[in-house]
Amino acid sequence: MSKALQLLFPSALCLLPFTLLENSNLNHLHATELQELLTIARSIGWGAADILLNVQLADLAIQDATGEPITAADTAVDDYILNNLHASLGRNEFAYLTEETYKAQPSHERLGKPLVWVIDPLDGTKDFIQGTGEYAVHIALLENDRPVLAVVVCPATSTLYFATLGNGTFVERWHETPVPIRVSQRSHVEELTIVASRSHRNQRLNQLMQQFPVQKQRSVGSVGGKIATILQQQADVYVSLSGSSAPKDWDLAAPELVLTEAGGRLTHFDGTPLRYNQEDVSQWGGLLASNGQCHNFLCAEATKLLAEIDAS
Image 1 (cartoon, rainbow, N blue to C red):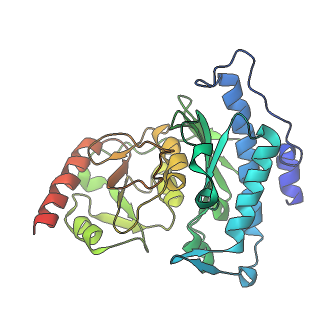
Image 2: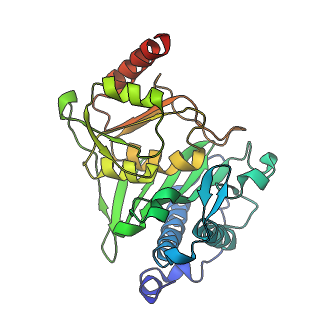
Image 3: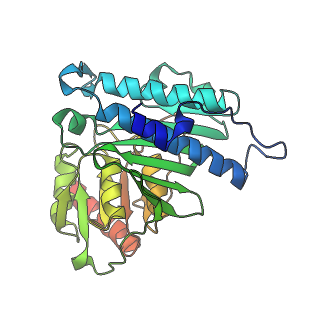
């Protein structure tokens, strides 16, 4: 960790063991506990950003596993986050689900557990490799399979977004005091901008985008980066449509909470909420994130258009 980060977040160097309050129910975190956990997660988030910003691209040691790129940075940041969470929180009261370790993890270690950390150490690995800067770090805490705490870090812009359930979303920039952040209030479809993927596209999604009511588009790499774009009021809508693969819990849990606490929404096309920490960690089907203003209408339009596309 850099000296600047040590000064900004000294707790990242020596995290004190966290214990649940004696009168706390594992099915409901006390507000004080949640804020303590948030302090720890923010500190770790900045430390993870520091690692990514100091990686030498020439030394990435890119490996290709099942068609998806994995770099030494992915595993280094995953180890850093897990090691710091374990050191501070232990392994008894919390379960852990991360992109880099879930395949080797027995599912019984997390399924049915009330408190689960969901971690993506590097969301947008392709963009990280390509040097676009459009990558993020996601850290979320689930309580009974729904996010109650979230940190999304965009290292290239030295920006961290954080939220706890019911307390709004805040944006924190390097050496600056966190401030509340809200999504746009644009409510006319013709005013809206949709943020789309560069790489995760298929023919079905392209057909949907060609006919979708929102036609102004911009491209951003990672899911965290897309949601940050909506938080910054540079876009208003994001659509995810699974094909041969689908976004995973670690792609969405932290971005969902920072979006919804800022006034936005993220649901399946039928309006139902996402459920995390299931046997299958993929979020299949159509998902729509928005500033909330035209959410139901856009979900209905996406459902209708997909039915027409699939019938043709």
